[in-house]
Length: 461
Image 1 (tube, rainbow, N blue to C red):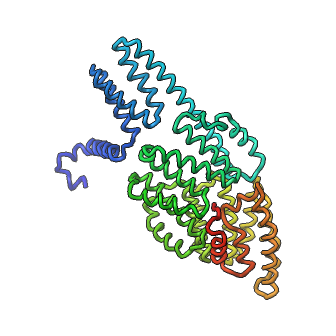
Image 2: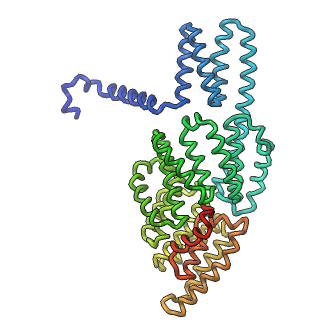
């Protein structure tokens, strides 16, 4: 290209021209994707320039505008910067003692609100550390530390949360606590409170669609199946207003994940297979923007769909993608589920030769992570000790296999009501799978029947 354009004047300054073009593109992108934060920064910069030029009245006018925007958006840090660098300079320039005193008082009030927000933010992140380190709790030894956080006086009295963000953190911290403990009703109640709070401030939604989408995601995770269509409808309406790539990536994930999960939960696998075609056609547009947790959740729901419709090889393909493309440090319970579900998929696919090594690897993983609970112990014993003794090719072997599945179901069914074991059933309906084996029916048929019997009120993971 350089050779072809060697006679052009700009080619002699190509490096400088490229840098200029790069800056202009960034400037255009900032303008197109500008949000309230970039607007605030630009206004503060304009106020500083006007002040330095001695245009104090114009500078003060912009500062008043910044204060109004900051107050409307609960941006305490902006107000602190304005008081310290903007208004105080103007007040001192005019030797306005009363104004100086008023600024100092307002600054103290904003500092108090800023500190209030920080207290709730820190409590949320402290609890979040346990959630992302251990996942949904199945071990009593972590609960005392979690209980200590939730007993903090600021989490015992909602009225102590004085700012918009402080109230969000209050609700979300309680929701996270209830989620860790496996209390679905209270988890939904607090996530719904978060959603209600943000929807009372529509300007906050417009300023940060990604956060609003994550709020909807949390509510959808916690709600019962009968409530899902209401929130799916909210997501579909956002399709025409969400513009930024980052927010559209969040919308892609939340909408497709929960639509597929809803169809799977209801046993509507024909609709799921149609929906997955749309999702897969759009995936290349957004895949790079998905984080590991989103990628795991989306790929696992695809794998569960193929498992439920007896498509074992596509199921294993998506499980392999999870293994190859995600890091399991995001949630240890994710890896535990994946390893177990991988065993089930290979069992259904008839890959008897790989099962012993998969089971041994799973067992060692659980020992290392100190996660060998009653549920996993029962499954490992079944595949390691019961299955090898049975020859399903004979009529007597088929009866023995059904009896073995029934025995396993009898052993793990009570765990669904165990406070420290029940959370494992959030990932996959093992009891329905066992029932399909015992009754020699398709898993899809059993799921549809159970969903119809519950009237669409079942919970979901």
